[in-house]
Image (tube, rainbow, N blue to C red; front, side, top):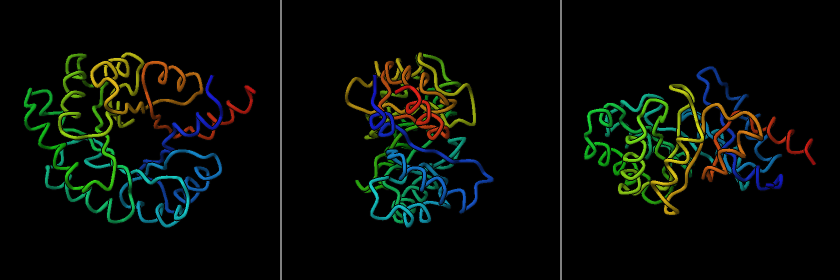
Length: 223
């Protein structure tokens, strides 16, 4: 059984809705500090606001690149990543090129990820969003391996905007593919403590959720 602190330390407290306001981001950051979440995950336009709010805090700032489709050019993803780091992000969750995956163009997929890793200049962790709900099992495995070869630090299940979101089966496949070398982030539809625990049991080392506060309330209620 995970302790409350252990649960909180797994969570990227997430708000990626297109209608989110600066006030919403401030509330997100306040909640993250109160509960001890690992990070806040926000859209690129709010990275500086979050970084300023959390200055001096242990809570990290995470943002997204090529989000949510992954169909941006590699140059666009590079610029997004570099700007995010400049404005205060210490973690970057990039969407890989799904069309290239479906075409079996693994060299393109690898170069696309490598470019984002290089753009962060060692100043941020890079997580690669696979969008597992749109992939076949063999594609999940190959994409996970390719992310590791390209220098990424994590593989991540989903954007939360497409496909089925995180599943135990996808997390298990990802963990089997990367072994202990990379982190595995489960995200998309994780709203309860039971779901979080299932994902951790399957191999997840980070949880992306917009329901972190509700999950912590469950933790408190279960003691």
